[in-house]
Length: 358
Image (cartoon, helix red, strand yellow):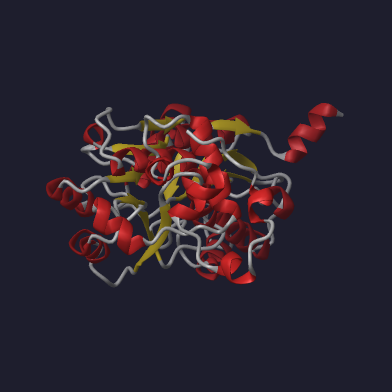
């Protein structure tokens, strides 16, 4: 095997036309000294190619701006080298969506796969996007979000034998790859933390109740509130996915009229900030007569109000895991499907931490 050459030395003396020609596998072969077949298999993640060889080849490919000819790759291998992430087009920017996309993309970095985000609209049949991917063979695997217990997209993909991973669990989870956050434990933790603050009347702003994580969260809150003797009020007019102004207006009205809750549990930072705005518009102050416990997928709540009680959902780890699991199913690996459940960890508000340190 030829000794790999140094990139700068190899490029020195080349004409302008040569330097601006689209790089090919042969270009990488010439620059590294590895055979074209070795280069191709290394970029494809072949398991019998050493990690050091893969690293060398991928580094050179990145430096010269090599982009695979997808038509050629598909003709040779039958693969698209695409992982499709299907997301709702209505997701809010303060939800986990943007961080999830970023972390999955980072997880695929250095592999032979590229991430493509496919939009799904609430007014459309949720199967439409997934069917199009499968029928047109536009991806090697699919990552699904906003999972329902009997998700018809999952049922369809299992029936078709098409590779997929879910961010959330279904009733068939033992049969497929997934990453999930323990939302039941979040519900228990939230109610218990508010109980420690002696909050007796709890208002829950839950996710859409047709989704698995909402069912799990409500179950956990109910269980803990029942044990603690707390009165639980589950909001039916809004969800944590509702428009911010709708949430703000609802909470302002709710905390102006009738018996007022003294504790609020919110499933997202977006809903939390909107709810607190409504509470303050009703003339109440956070931390005095009431407390709010929130899930935090984006580190922003301390900048809004430092005395919000919260726990983090690690979206970066979720994205990395989903990317690795998608690669495994796309490669048709015979290993058992990758599965993980993130257990929540609590941390007090900045105000509480500062009070302790003082």
